Length: 453
Ligand code: ADP
Ligand code: ASP
Ligand code: MG
Image 1 (cartoon, rainbow, N blue to C red):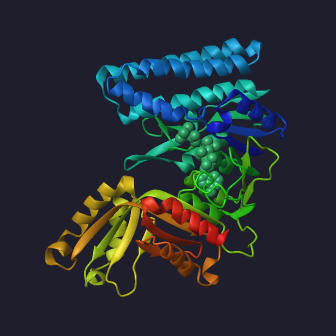
Image 2: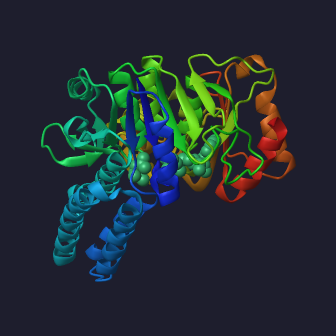
């Protein structure tokens, strides 16, 4: 059995939906098809919610436009015998959605719970449409079998419970199932939640892992995983093979093509992932497996995280502060903050680490309280913070064995006058990363891409 996931652009228009129908109907007899909301809809659902919360009555026009977009697709695509049924189901969902917006407008407040409910309608509607579009497909509701639990302010998948519910849902199943991606329910409260932006990939991975699928296919709008983001580097090339670890590194460092948590469940079960193009279905795509053949050439790709904040703990005695690293990591973990780069140049007495810009304020508070005694005594001279930075990751298996890659990256940037604020060759040998000023990001990516590809 295969699990296929079609992203927003793949289900965004009449033409792209026709491609989806062809791909699935010409495929194997047993397939689970996970779909995102119509392209761009999640952003629009959020923007409309914010309008309503701000007391802007034009949320009503937005609501009209959202309805019209769905009705148009239904009337152009769904055969007459099924059309009334689909219109009825989607209209009911739209009515519920509008009721949510009206409530937000009335109280001028947008609680997270309500926003989670609002965004869920995107996938709930698209899945009804796709299930009716594909001959013989059956709709399954992921709200009943994808479960989350609270982790700090986030909702994370309760993998064990979700696996057992998925297995129950699809016991003895054969045929074509359509499943809304992204959406879930809280295991304790039953509230509607989601797996985070881009989370439909993760829904598909959870299903693939729970059911021991033969492959997870991610259908999107590019020919495969590329050597860099093609929107920034137009000369980026498709990478035919990649290892799980390489894809994990590239995605954790900003390659948007797969939502990072997606890779763990399938990696664990050794289920290959294929990245394929809905708009060019015969292109070979990228195959991600446990160990991709090592190319002659060590670097597989480059990715970047735009909003980066760097903290530096300074002082001659910085290295003497007991367990400075572990205390920093533990402090960050208390709020679920990921540290994605650490740099501790020999003999500098300074310890730097990078977090996402969105986590920076919380990180600053945590640091100030964790190291308050050392700051008061002067054991730490200061904790400095630099914003408006970006992190670039150069990724490939076995990079440490190829000499001088790190210095080549640094020198390339240096020659162009781009300051490297922090640099790390990583704990693993699959990643070299550097922090640079955000305004130089695109230029730096161009230079590094040209250096390696
Ligand atoms: P979907 O709606 O199918 O989930 P996404 O927009 O989430 O699609 O992901 C696909 C997009 O990811 C591509 O259109 C491309 O612009 C972007 N992208 C960023 N980095 C890469 C990369 N290294 N390889 C391929 N695509 C990338
Ligand atoms: N529709 C959701 C989003 O835009 C989930 C997804 O597309 O994967 O984030
Ligand atoms: Mg995506």
